[in-house]
Figure 1: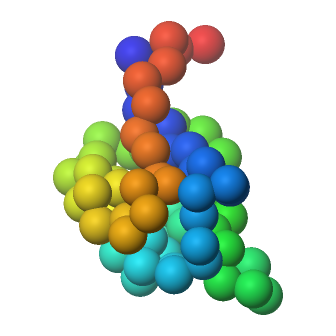
Figure 2: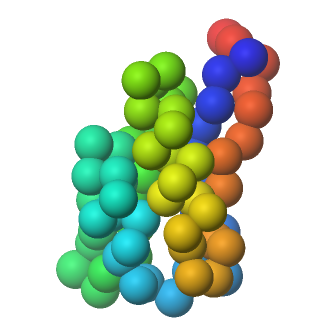
Length: 69
């Protein structure tokens, strides 16, 4: 199983906190909404990804488990 980041675009308000906490995997578009890097979250970044998801003010950032391909 691998972990991937997902963002719920309806819930996201563009605060940008996720990109501040996890710049290795998240950048912001010109309006402040997150652009998530493709692929699984590397093992060494899993704690930071969890922290970014927990810190999202609107709970729009999710970590989901997926079967390996």
